Image (cartoon, rainbow, N blue to C red):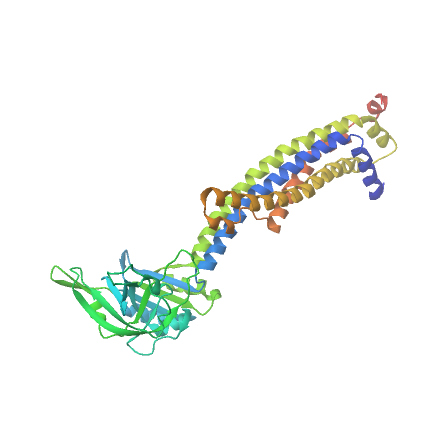
Length: 422
């Protein structure tokens, strides 16, 4: 019996009870679609979170928060920075020291409070810090200000309603005044703004920072504080190491961890999230597989009924010398075709549901919460590997469901089958 003949035989028998075939395929379709759509939630949310991190984080940046010495923790010191510089694939090492005192910046009659940091501006430039306009400072009295700095400067004229500063601050001479906690002037100096920072990628972020060269003459005054007669110095609040490219981040991170540094990077976060989402997706696939197994009961019942209905036909086939292997193959082919139909329709249906979910849910959430960021969230994503996994599980379960009925068909006694009324 040729394969084409076997296929035609299976096709003819499947068409004898179309309603039963339809319901069996429908059950298999729903099981496969449920598995794919359920697992697609894990893939979709992972893609959204990773994309968000990659858009708003610098991929080659590694932040250092301290160093372990045995069971103790200590702050990073200048000697540690020099040790880090000896590592390979480093593009820049940015060290920022935050001025903890209140700082006011003024130009003409306009003034406002700003966040002030002392940093190595040459390293900032090498790290890829972006400017909207201007250049990086070359003199000690030159500074860079954040994109929104002009928005926090208001006219101090009490006789009129306060107005914010209009126009660009580039090349303006400003006065930087640092007050102590008793509101006395601790430091005051004039600076020239030679660079305006680029607009932050995050819409919610308001950047009114001021970057001053760490080599400025008043460094000790700005980065020290007297408490109960003792002077405390604050150094290196932010330490960021920039790899030459994103591919070197993992190796550089491992080198830093081997030296005892406590680090954080986008790749570290992505790796951590990947572990979580792998467990989540595995769990969802297992739950979806339960639905496929439940659907397989329909295939088992259908194939068992088919064997019962075709007892006499099977007897005739065995009487004329049909090999039991061929008979078994015919019924396995039928269960496999039912599974294949369910997979094909289920995949098409799951893509349609995924599209509907990604179109409807964000709009509903935006309407309810008034949070437009939901429009950028992908709630369902169906990669090709998910389709392959679902297809493999569904086809395997369908074929396994047909094994017992197929074996039953090969054990039918010829005489009993021929004596049975049609």
